[in-house]
Image 1 (cartoon, rainbow, N blue to C red):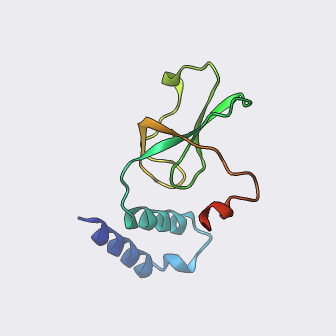
Image 2: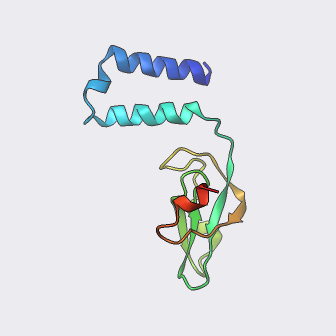
Image 3: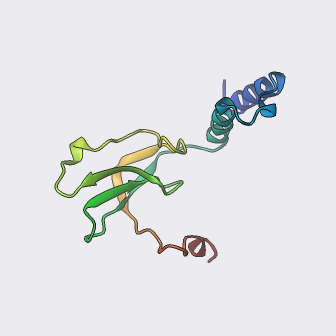
Length: 116
């Protein structure tokens, strides 16, 4: 089964069982997330690292949704850091082998970077 067939089967199942009629069900949200994850190529992207010297923690950030995947305290060994293969929040496949530096935009300016 390929991605397109999986998406079609999920959508067919949702329609057949009327899952969209009950938006309060977590199943609909889970199935919508599965469709979104299957709809995009999911090549591993390098984890982003926010290592500001004035902070006690170093943040490891998802390259796709920009939310924190994991953190470590300064001085903590890297071997103890939680290193998922897929981000729990958005499903992006992440590559820990070559972390890339990242600085969060100041509050209120997150959307400005995309306007270029």
